[in-house]
Length: 455
Image 1: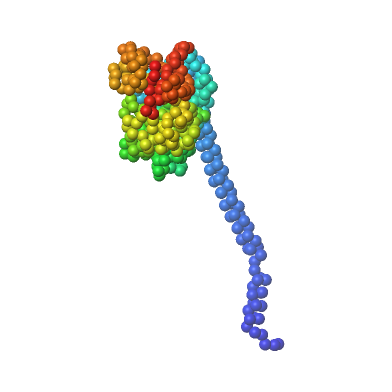
Image 2 (image 1 turned 180 degrees about the vertical axis):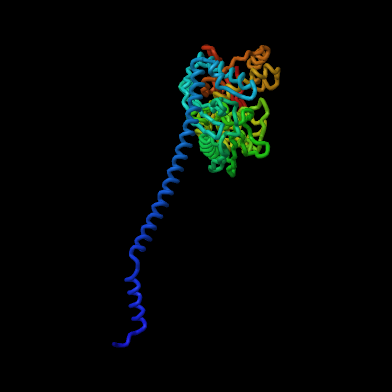
């Protein structure tokens, strides 16, 4: 027998122990581990199934609640469609009778509307938001081919959903549209309106400041608020913060929430503010030509904003021939008592007739001003509109001043430039009164760079 080392002895002992281990016990341990794993999987599966069942049940209940709400709205709209006041009023509920009486008036208005307009009460629900026992529903109706939306509020009572007075605290989360030079704060209901308005005003600011040279472009903030009593206006605390009532407090365009009427309202406020800044807030004196010119610039700018022809012919023809920037130069040189000759200066021509402008709206304003000055018995300003160097013209003006004019609107439909017998530039205006097929001819002579009536 040879000498054995310690490590050889220990290895041999380990082999002996391994060979003598209980195989059955090892198998039982493995089985136990597998059983534990399977048990845990079963428990997890059961818990998951229970959770899924609960979620399915909750979703089913929510869908049932929403369907009952939809059925209620459908029944209400059907009652309006067929003229069943009793059923319609059954869908209404409030703590006082005021709401019922108000909805009775709504019912009558719909019945009258059906007689006068092409209205389709489709009952189509565009959006539903439910929060516990209260709900907000956007319902569509089509009037004369145009889709409109109304926001109706409901409360879930023990006997079902009922149409309740507006709850403007349930108008959705406050969000913000951020654009270049414009921020719009709004709530969920007004999301589409806010984005349409923000995009439009961003473009309007660029157009307005390019024309009026307003310097650094202002930062405008708008708050869209669900307030029936709110009048659109600039904030008293911030000259560049506008408050806009949500159109959804009433009937709003489904396809175009920022409709033309609302565009005009916002565009007028913005144009007025840009004009005030660019002209150092000059306030023209009536009835000087400056009074007309400022209004004409405002009308032209609003037309540019909303892409609608506002019949600001003089300013439009000026901008077309000399570029939009000429309007800014005109505005900045405008004084409270400026006369129309300032247009030649803005255009950079020696005499007004060389500017080649379309004078129709200016002459229409002059005729309207004549009538107004007669009603006011303001003979001095009235005569200043005439070429009183001509005795015949003075006599005609004096006779005309003795007759109080009616309220008929007269419009100049053409005014070509001519040269008179005396060599002076003249405008031969063709005038037509509203509701009349007859026309009259009015002459205006250029006297000291001012158009004055010559007949």
